[in-house]
Length: 200
Image 1: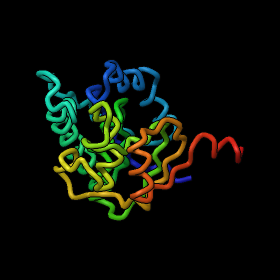
Image 2: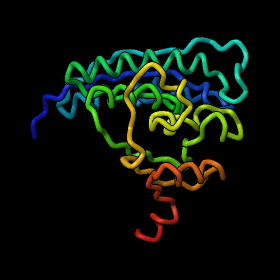
Image 3: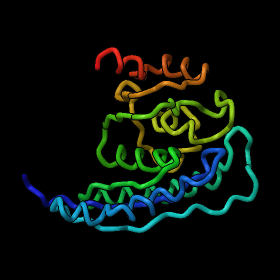
Image 4: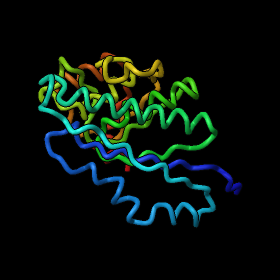
């Protein structure tokens, strides 16, 4: 097997998308577990590009999209880093924790590579927008945003989008009522936990 692929490890210490804090420690925890060493053992040329750190929020901002200014600004920096990595022929490995980071990484890949597909493995749909979200927590919105289904401001820094028909959502078990309707409306393929159990 050819082992000359360059890997760019890009961390983003984001935890602003949810009500509970703490997932911003994900990049450090994954590195501490020996990520770089294990990539080297696989014969891969891995470069650690460091972490993007969001601005400290001053209040919640818009209650329909909490911490939107800080999330969008950090994601724009992530978008630039991922776009540069793909453009240089590397494979970016993004370390996060908060699902919001998909709004920075996926559009960058779509912009560089064109018509891509996404396999979204999650118990939640993350297909709300600012009108359908019952909480205003933006970690429930990134898949909708990258599919061009809103909120547009979450991906305004990029023209890269994913066609909804090219998305497969796997493992869903907790979907909001309005979110469920939106998934159906836009034609997202959803494979729930019950679907997986039946075919196991």
